[in-house]
Image 1 (cartoon, each protein chain N blue to C red):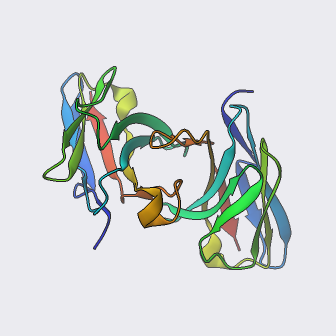
Image 2: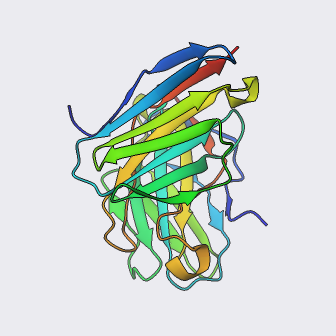
Length: 114
Length: 119
């Protein structure tokens, strides 16, 4: 595997379900991110982890819970979601080197909440 | 005010021709970075090119070049010799300095331009 991988690629869940999204980066980076991409909206940054510590949480509802057990893995735990949470969830990673810090993205998980 | 503005929701270009995708940005920082990403229908965001605010020359990466006009706060992406595989959504993004944004890692994205390359 190379780059950033995400599983599953597609997920359909009911509002009462609990599920998790997984992201893995094979780039040796030290920072990982979760973004949400809704239809007709710009990408929204949800969480940032640097060296496995959460450094940003952009007012995301508590029904989204991130976990970063090590620098290569990032999870997004989902519970009691709402239909408006249906979106493409993108994971990214980067190696912070100052202004040129470039984020590399995974293929995304397309989530549908019924 | 929006930090990143992409005024072209959709663009069409004939195969093998060049196309320019517009991006203007708003920041009071002196140090910032500008990025372009490509998103095909599969969903993955693919990094294309980077321009630093202090870079004296316009960035180039293969068929991609960035027309950076600092005084006008514009960072237009130029794709030369368009190919059918270039059909995708294109996003301009900016990262401001640590001091102003509170984070060295926050990327702000524009709303994107859907490019269609015609055979």
